[in-house]
Length: 360
Image 1 (spheres, helix red, strand yellow):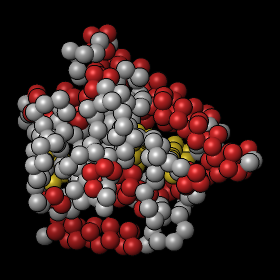
Image 2: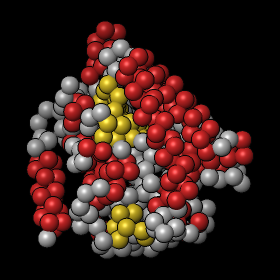
Image 3: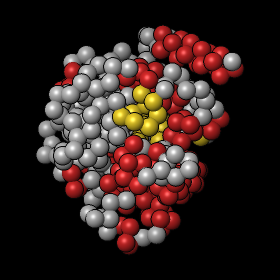
């Protein structure tokens, strides 16, 4: 009975939260860095199989599949933008025009990683380093609009930045030994150390460009993704334990890195959105299918993605956690974004949540 009560309370809280975000945004702009979890069309025109501008992706999105999101509707970044008060999604870098960049840009790219070679077997993608270069270009464009370097820097200092990187450095690099050398060159602990060191350098660059309020997502339970359990089989936990153990090494080192950034960089406010806690703790908020995709999976080149043969996905999409073998449904994205914005459990965020970050 208590779990049902918790479920009702959480659903009411989510409704109230999304009802109260009308009006002025809590920050003047929102910049999004990441992979397919937040990509909203940047991969559409790249030569890559890692794109989602075809049916059934976008089946529940207002303008359909051409939006390029790797889900049935809105993604995590869309919901965070709404929660911090924006009345529409942040535009992708590929199509952002004129003054609309003043409210932020989405640089997310499917199969992108911290490492430049990550995801290369699928074609072009915009790595974290390239996304930082794109952000430099955006800053120059903002400065040309405002015509004042001080005003540009002041604006950037007040914005929210979210970073969702690292998933593909395991899924489409370390765990794919047929195409990448990393697992033969490094132990899991050494790879996690090198990856976090590179990531910290990228976050330092972001800070040097003016970012002060930065929410970094750590890596979730990749061993529980349908694609990984299908490939490796399940342990008693229901997931692939060795993959989750690799990820835990990264997450432990990332927490130390975030502390270093906050201690050593002026006015830095970096936080971690803990994807493991967010995906496992608390009531299930209506989900009934946790380990199977909603769409029919492609058996050709788009590994783990929905087939592009026009097949209709499941009708009860709000009950599924996964839309394809890698990506959450819109309902799951809403739940993830909500708990990233306002932590339900103390373990959901460190040292504060996005709500605390933008309000300071």
